[in-house]
Image (cartoon, helix red, strand yellow):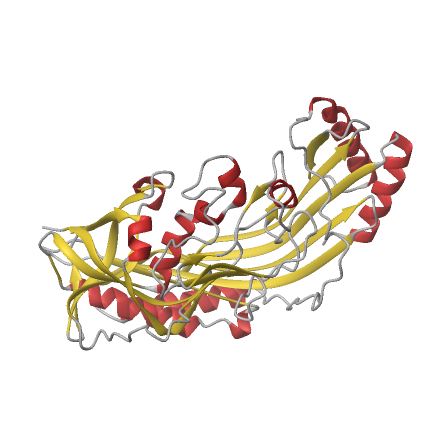
Length: 446
């Protein structure tokens, strides 16, 4: 793993030798082991160590040069600083980045969370057992073509020439299963599930197996549905994928680049139903992938994006915050250009008027489990989407798998058409979210 203090010393001595007064460095190192299996036999076993470091150097004119390296010894850091110094002559003079004003603020609960890695044979045996049980669950399940079990240790750090020095290390274990059915006279059907935890001992392998089994069996007997307007119930995973696809709504960099569904005047305006509240909460207790600082060294925190339907906040880097007279929010990713991204969404409702609908009582509603083709079916700048999905037609608790259908609409209209945000939330890798009910969405079926 990376030794941050040694890198800081390398950078300090090399910068002095090169006549560099202002610089910062962000980097990460990943130790990963992963396995895949096929019909009870190991299919692929991989082990890797990957390091990536971004170096920025400011010259006397205030413009910035950026370079990257994977060579973390003294010579590698020196060459990266020298290259970035040369590149600074060609840096943009229009709104150049600067250090985050919060890069030296103290961070609470910044302890490492490293779990001892399990042996590779244990990973293989665990995944083979899961695959075997899935294949035994139903005669129609003929394969598990996509599967994987991995564990990794990630260390991140940030340092700059003004004395900021941050680092953290985390361990993760992830299992993924995707099933495939084959029955004569029927289309192949499939389902997937993924679980993440701090280590293999706490990884919910049984929960992953149960989820993918139940979903697969529920999709075997399917039927077509007529096209029309339906009340749609989005699963937590499906709703979060929509939020992510249209995250330019609250991304300050997108707004400044005029690549957003909102603008500089949107703060304080209604963008969704009063039933919806949304936060980006990197430090949420259920966020296994919690990060305590961003690529600029800014501490992460809970950011209120939408409150009772009102756009209340944006995600900022130090640069966008300065241009918009705000504060950095800990959402910056540094590179050739500083970008802004989310961490971990939390969807909920504060409204006392939020009704509680129940799938056991609903009639002729569609429950969407997973949206497909998000890369092709979303126009993030226009706000439109047309997406195939996996889901069920629900009538008083009875779920009937839908053969093939597409849901389409306008994202801002969808947000304002929310009629229920259920009270019971589910933890997913991308956030915490309950099921969300939306009225009158167009579905193209039979």
